[in-house]
Image (cartoon, rainbow, N blue to C red):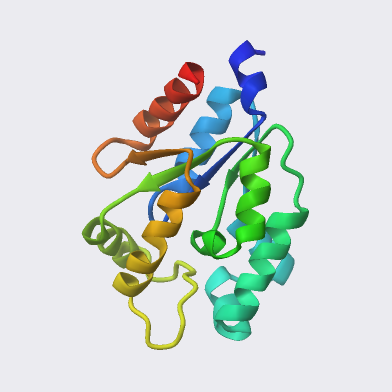
Length: 173
């Protein structure tokens, strides 16, 4: 085990849907020797349906409560956590993740997110009725920035390069 990993037994990734949290998370967990947890996947398994079906069936507020419950109860020791994009709506959940270790914001522009999400229209996204992706982007971006210990523009580099940049930041801490 690498000594510097001991100082960050938990690392959490936050950001918009399509930012790459799950993809980067798997790669980074391998680099750091941590368990990997994708909270969207935990919700899908718990609910027995694709994430978007849960969002549609439960509604925005109930879905956010479910997401908070998952974030508050899942084990986080020695874990790389890829959060759902709406995790930042829960102050309690974000406080728990920050207490467990560094929180990294994967920052991607709205236009790039639109391209990525257009390629996967079945992606689960927690919206209020009538909201657009631009609306939630502008609402969440300050929450991500506030919650993050480190922000990384990961629009132009590969997932592998993004994971390496985060690992380098962790080593330098």
